[in-house]
Image (cartoon, rainbow over all chains, first blue to last red):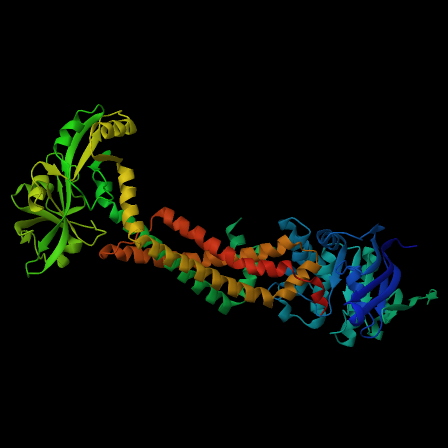
Length: 235
Length: 385
């Protein structure tokens, strides 16, 4: 059995109050394990991104409990949550969110700098990560000079720079063509297994489903199904 | 930090700050123009203030006296009362006093050769000791004042006083004098030029009786305690005030710059420059910050603490300050250099350049506060929008 990284217990997120209240998450309970790629599927408005924000310590749930490595995050200060993200979480965004004024390797190195890596190690470590993702020859290029797939791989390299135990990807293939999207999904799966980190991918792209070890389906803020490839399905 | 790192710093807050500025050249240009304008405005006004202050006290600063004995109630060196010369002999008897010399400073009317009249300040000094003599002489020597009617006038005011050559005859208070020498750069705050001559001739030209003067200049004996001698002179001599040179210089500067409001006007204009700089830097930096909110939110999502974001903004402000300060200082220095040839002095001593640098940095940092406040409240979930 893989080690549990993150546990959610009856998590609820409500925006607004009274009659205008919107319940984005309605009692989600799940755990996320190392070395596993979890696909988070569901229609628009089902709460996928909100769930990802809660998992990434970016959003406090209105109710319920989030545990990282068994430790409850309830009542944790903003600074403490920021520290947790820096130490343990990596993000990959739909629109890459690369820094347009920095070259590819510098985008990766910023994440290393955030973790306090020594200056002299920034460039070699960033280049090694880009090489791992097949982008060694694009290291000196600015994001505007890269294709969508290349940008996303730079974003993945940046997310991996901090050696996260939890990698959260929000629609990482949505802006990519089919082949490139599948290549990115394959990279995520390979890295999850190779680095033994937990990967959660929010997507409504059915072509990436085969790259998940587990598929969670959300509907109206509730967990509709929890299936493992080659394993049992839980409703 | 190596030179290469200044131009191309390693990834971090400095690189982000520098690239944010460099990739928005039009906005950077606007920021720098604003900073240069503010630096020049502050530098010019403060330079004029320093220039005016030095000009106001120039006679005191150059008279080579340890102590000044002035008539009671004297507020500045240019507007003097009367002292009996007998005080000079009384002062010489005070222990610790090495020499006491009379010194005349008095307004008078100068009749120009073409018939016009100007106000001047006649400055009379003891020719024997030359304490209070003109400095920066370019033509003639103090010894030339031994001629019956000799006076020395700075070149800056020759046109104003209608002087065309050495040896020219003019009139002061309807008494004939001859220009026998010239100085360079002895300005007057009151715009009434200084006319140097001997003490006795100054008494005659300003209609003072021979037993009166305006000031007494005291030189202390080696090793004498200046403050003790000052107190002894004040106790010994009736109806006088005894000042240290620095004290009388400061009093004179205070009088002309504060009492007349001239200094306040200059300070107000300098403050206006500071305000303009804060507004320009604040606006452009804020616009840049708002444009890059998604990037700041990404940094927060990646785990950047607030201080990391603040550092990026502060460094943008500091880099802008440095880039704007250098040309601003160059323009200010050029203006100060050119002012040497005019009647309005503008000085830029090293300490003022350092003060300007500090003001510029402070101005830019103040301008960055609004941006800092904005990123402090950033919501990192906006990266998923």
